[in-house]
Image (cartoon, rainbow, N blue to C red):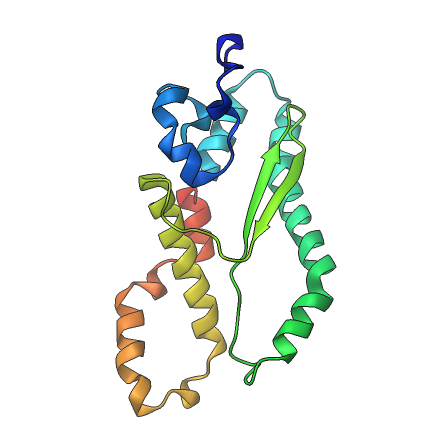
Length: 178
């Protein structure tokens, strides 16, 4: 961002949907014109001379710790909500964490979305969301024993396996920079 852009309210947006609508106003190639994959952000930070390499390496563990602390704080509320469900051993919820990173590479929680939008920000979002969802389904699938799959679920199992769930792991996503 340049000083000339400070009066443009669209350059300060963090919301995916609103930000995507105003990307042209922000200028091409600007960091705030959409989402960056984590690998792209970390590479950009590492290539920059403005940040100490130790701080760049510590960023992802700091974000993970922040997310963990939020989930730990919300544990009683989540447990209470799960207890209200008729079946509690086959449920999950996907949360979206919006994290801002300051100039000292400290992560700050902006918000937690209980209904995160998927695929809103373009090709990068679709790629990241697909990898994340495949990992989510892989985790869920591993938790379901083969003995609990009935005949009526065989087609669903076949469709899931056709998505390539066995081909993409969390490590694969980390390698691909998702």
